[in-house]
Image (cartoon, rainbow, N blue to C red; front, side, top):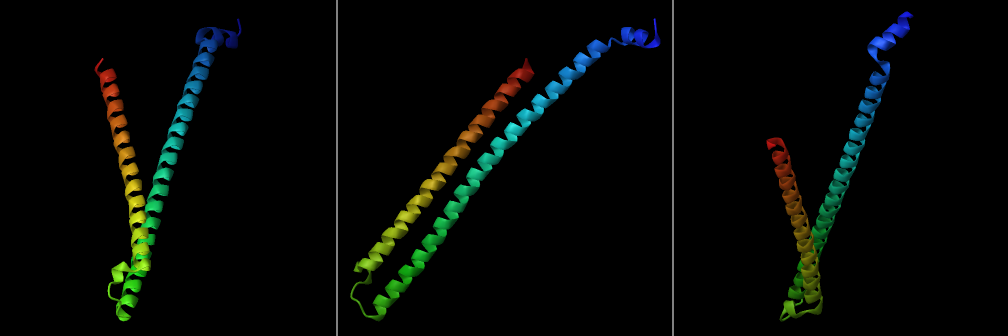
Length: 135
């Protein structure tokens, strides 16, 4: 029996190869799962960023509308209008402000609901982990 044949017999290379392949496959599966998790997290953060940007842009529109409203009221006061708040332009600007603020409130409520759901899911997952660790 040659040296290599003796080494193969003693070392059981087939078993070592199978174990190596199994470990590499498990490692790849873990990496794939981690990549999927990272991808989902990035998607969530992107959605949150989009919502925050939308709220910000709506807030900027509200500020523009308030500036417009102030200008309209000032013009009416300079012209000595009897009741500036009864003006069509003033009331339409106020309606626009109310609509924008309603949109902002709606977006913020959606964001709060999603964060509450996420917290509930995390705590449920922690409970499962604790149960498994306790067994």
